[in-house]
Amino acid sequence: MKKFRTTPKHLKGASRQLWVRLRSDFNIEDGAGLVLLQAACEAFQRTQEARAMIEKEGCVIMDRFNQAKPHPAVNIERDNRAQMISALRALKFAPEDMP
Image 1 (tube, rainbow, N blue to C red):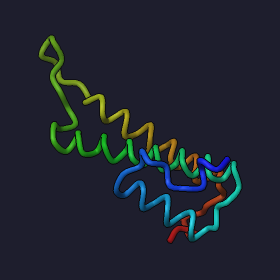
Image 2 (cartoon, rainbow, N blue to C red):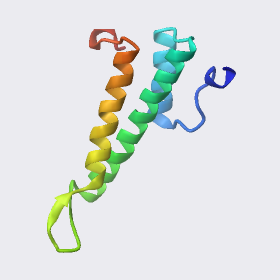
Image 3 (cartoon, helix red, strand yellow):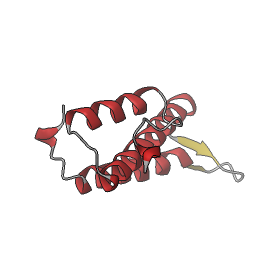
Image 4 (tube, rainbow, N blue to C red):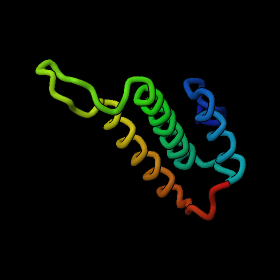
């Protein structure tokens, strides 16, 4: 289980900082807690990546029939935000607990 004792290497920037901060502030040491924390941070990272893509390209794109449709990153952002919230709830975090 040692692989979860350090910050996952694939987490970058704000996601990595979130891992460190939440793990420290809430003293997350158990295997299940570390798996949920990793899932929350991965979802947060994907949410941030999708948000950056939407900001760059817009939330609407034109399909091959020249019809406007939502950018696929809109769904990625929404789905990963929900996954992040779900993982944080599974850790039994409440908004007033967040640092």
